[in-house]
Amino acid sequence: MRSTDEQSEADAATDAPKTRRKTGYHHNDLRNAVLAEAIDLIATRNGPHFSMREVAGALGVSHSSVYRHFADKEALLDALTEEAFRMLHIYQLDELAKWPDDALTRLRVLCFSYVRFGQEQRGFFRLLFDNRPDSNASRWGTYDRAAVATLIDAIRRCQDAGILIPGDPSRLAGYMVLAPHGLAHYTSQPRAPGVKSQELLSLMAVEELADLAITPLLRNPPSPEEIAARFFGDA
Image (cartoon, rainbow, N blue to C red; front, top):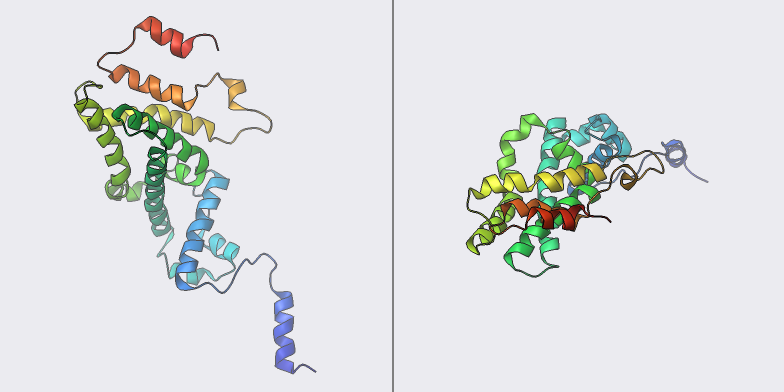
């Protein structure tokens, strides 16, 4: 026979909300769980459209326990922003490791990594570029330093090798991100069921896009006819 207390505990367990995922988080586990849940919500809702109470409820914890890790939603988004740029840099390093280490290849590969990041990490991509937390913008220079430095270094190496035109590498980097950003944004957008982006437009592969983006910066660019035939000829 169960005691009255044991029976009460059993009844409480039976009546507990079925949506709870976990209640026994350790300190660091809960912080990481909150980050993961928030980024999933951003990806699902196409932006940071959630409340701290929603995050707590999804994890099966009290909202006060979430506030022990993040003072408010802005602090949570700030932590996610830092993590997003760290993730982008990981994508850069991962892609660079797959290819030869010559200067021009490194620059092309950084375009590939950017598009992969946008397509595979929709939540982080949306957080950074579709719903930028302006109040945290002053800290972006710290968060994105590694990713930006990697791109600028690749540009400098190409300039030193006589491949690219002279100029401010940071200005060239600002230009270089535009094409992969556009492709990543377009191909990571939610679409109507059964509709593929290729059915709406004839999109370039990321390798072609990277080469075309670099072309105007080359010291010895191909002729207009060569560009037309290579990038815009019949498929």
